[in-house]
Image (cartoon, rainbow, N blue to C red; front, side, top):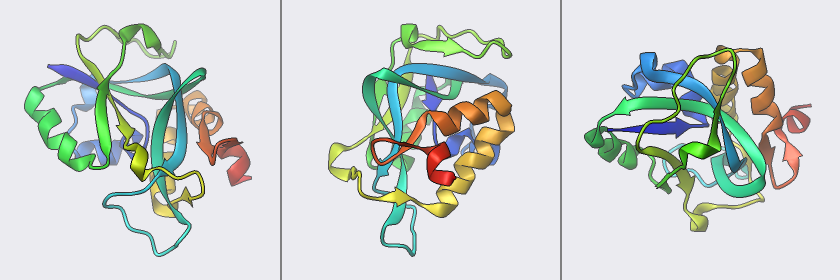
Length: 170
């Protein structure tokens, strides 16, 4: 039994439902010591654009944090299937001490095994831009939680190394 932190397209409720995730065990959280960035080459998501093909990834960073969702109560075989979906990423453990909850939601943040997916280093590039349909899915998902969550998503997501998603969209 474990928990998963999602930070990209899976923050969208329709993607969660399609993936068979338990919505009743899903809570908005803050994850410290990671930076979310559009730098991952997609494994299965296609784009007609040469440069606009990036999907989200995270990298370790002491100065950054990101928001996402914590999904608890997942069985081990669920992770086995999810590992296939998340081709191009590696599932790693996250220390519970790096998680904080949004004050407007009550959530227990102490599941025994908490995981997050981080992209393979050989599938990362700072010179690619977001895949447009993937970006729409992520933005729609961020809006579904609340205004603070959406604003935090814009401010803690980066295009290239230094441009916030909010600036990129302006």
